Length: 80
Image 1 (cartoon, rainbow, N blue to C red):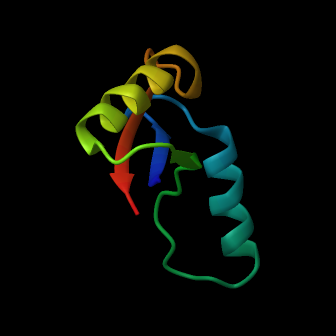
Image 2: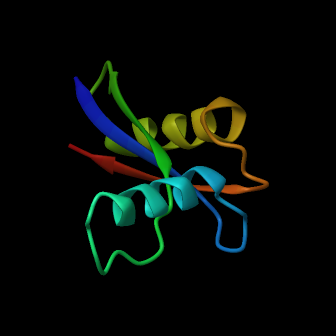
């Protein structure tokens, strides 16, 4: 069994209204010194097998087809 974590974030330059709202809310809660906040998504995925190279290729295909909008989002894959 292979366990992986896919992290999807907005590309630089893409407006992030949810991140901006979180940033303002943190300031309103008294957390001073918070800079820019960008929100994203995390997917923890378990795959059958032991071949990490194959799993990485499959995970990238999953991101390209479903998990990330590659026009406005970046993604990274790590094994946990």
